[in-house]
Image 1 (tube, rainbow, N blue to C red):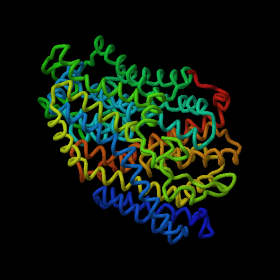
Image 2: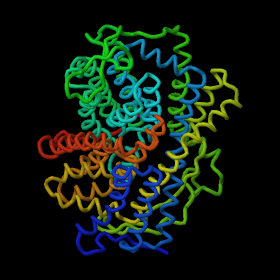
Image 3: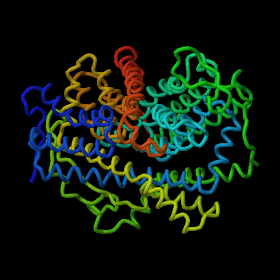
Image 4: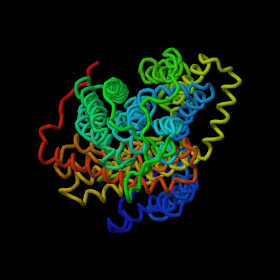
Length: 575
C-alpha cells in the first residue's frame, strides 16, 4: 500500500491548517489548561493526530499506526536512552556522595544564587547540551540546582529557559547535520549562519535568565558577571561555527570557555550584596508587590571546603562523560562500532548503519509544493545499539561509578531505581515522539508550514516561528529541522528569499520552542521530582519562549532585508 500526502483536503488552506493544528491544541489544553498528567496528554495528542490523519487527510489507518510505533521506537532509542543514562549518572553521583562535593565546589566559587544560576543552568547546561542534548542538560542541571538549595520549581523552569541558545548544536551538532541532510544545502554555510543569529541571543539569555528569578535591581547588581557569561559564550559560539566551521563541538567549546572565563572572573570580582533565598538565612524583603523570593545577606563562599583532589574525583564522572560522548561522536569510532556490532538482519543496502527498512519505508510520498516532485519518505530504524549516544552516556556512568568504588551490583540497583523514577517521563517522551511522527508522515506538519507562506513579506519572522512550532511539537530541534528544513528552502525560493538564511532560521527559531515542548517539561519535572506540575511550569515559561522567539524572528528579518550581504555562501568545513 502506498499513499501520497494531501495538503488541503478541505479546500480552504486556513481550515485545513486549523484541523491540522488540533493535536497541538489538544496536547497543550490538557497539559497546561486542565493539568492532565503529561503521559496521558501526549497519548491523547497522538490519538488526535491519528484521528485527524485518517478521517480528514485520508491516511490509511495501517500507515498511521505504523507511523506512531516508528516514532515511539525512535524516541526510545535516540532520546529516552540518553535522558535515562544522563539521570543515571547523576544518581550515581548522589549515591557516592560526590554530588555534595560538586555542589560545595560551585558554592565555593560563589554562594550568590544568581551566579550559581549562571554557572550551572547556562554554562554547565550548555556543555551537557553539546555532549548529549535531548533533555539531558535540563535533567542534570536541574537536579544539580536542587542539590544546591534551589526550589524545585526554579530548578525546572529556569533550566528550561537556559537551555535555548545552545540547542541548535546539541548532541554533537545533530540538528545541523539533519538540516543539511534534508535541505541539501551546504552544511558549512548553514552552520555559520546559525552562528550569526544565536550568539546575539546568547548575550541576551543570561540576563533574561537572572531577571526571571529576581527583580531588575538584583539583576543589574550582577550585570558584569552576566556580560562575562554571555559575551564569552557568544564569542566562542561565533568563532567556532564561522572560523573552525565544525558543527560537532560548538556547544562543548563554548560552554567550557564560558565556564572557565566566568570562574576566573569571579576570583577577582564579587557582587556588593550576596543574594540568597529567604530560607538560606534571615529574610529581607525585595520590595512591595514583588513576586520574587526574599533575600538575605550572608558571607560569600560559605559552606564546607574540600581538598582539590576530592573535587577532581567528584567531577571525574562528568569528565569521563565528556570523553565518551566525544568518542561516540567521532565518525571513525562510530563507524567501527556500527560495522562490528550491528546485527546483519537490521542492515539496509549492505550498510551497518543504514537501518532496518520498516514496513513504513517508502510507502508515503510528499508532493508539491512541499517538494519539487513526489518523493517517497524513508522510514529506516538504525539499530545501532553500541554507537548510540545513550550507550556512551550509560557506559560513562558505569565507568565513573566503578572508579569511585561502587560495586557492579550496586550500580545495577541504582539503575533500577532510575528506571522506576523515570517511568512516566519515558511514557510521555515516547508518546510525544509518536505524535511527532504521525504529524510528519500524515503531512499535517507541511500543512501548518504552508500556512506560514501566506505571511509573504513577513515570512522571515513567521518562518522563524515555524521552527519554534516544530520544536514545541516534537521536542527536538533535530526533528524540527527534519520536518521543516526542506519546506523552508522551498518557501524561501518561492518568495525570493535566501534559502541559507531561512533554513538556518528554522533551527535558530526552534531553540526558543525547546522550553515549552512536553518532552522537555516532562524531563524537567521528572528530574526535579515535580511530576504533576507540568501545567504550572508550562504557563510560566510560555511567555518567555514566545518573547525570545520574537527576538530571533526580528534578527532574521534584519538579515533578510537590511544585512543580506552577511548571509554566508560558499564556505567549506575545515578538517
